[in-house]
Length: 287
Image (cartoon, rainbow, N blue to C red):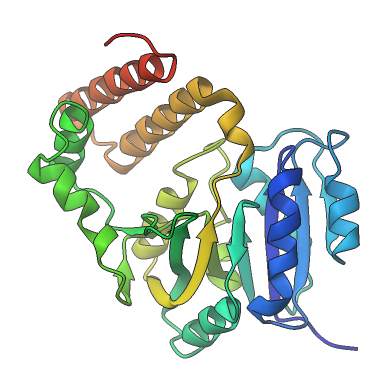
């Protein structure tokens, strides 16, 4: 009987359309004996259980909607002790041939690596931003306040500069859309902070991994496609607000000093304005 060393965890929330091609892409990605778990945040809706069973994956219904990080944490806790690497992925990802094997090989070659991210492409072949620096206070303020009114400002440019550089490197954080984590590092930190219901749990994890001495490695030799067929598109206005709420939570926790409260207030005000602007645009309203 084989002893699995790699696991794959994906989270479904009525994600039938995306789940089928994701699971179909798993065999060619590598890690022949990988354990595959579908954590379902919306059990009883759709056909996630049937799809998971058809592809030989374990179906794990959640007791409630635990959010992305909470569902991943629940799934990881139930994995066999032998598992050393866990690929955490959105269901709207199609894994490229050999991509998982490349990530595992790169991570196994360097014990300092706590997480790895592949090159992520959009469905049209363009590069999806998946490896960035954790923004400094100055960059965070400039990006939060000016991105919508002056997209080419130097702070946003600095934050986005890695998007056009598909070269192997260490990053501040890697996109949780497709992320391989060393289980020991993940467990040491208690997994994702599940107070982030959705969004920024990956930024927070990368930041905490870095603080704990682990590396976040971007490995573009492994490639996946982000199809964008994700259930959050059903309620874009609500998701915009959740995104900005999570960003505000991260800022408050990264810079907790009482002396920095004016700076936090400026960033949070900028995030609130951006949320309102993006929500109105999403509804077709004037800004």
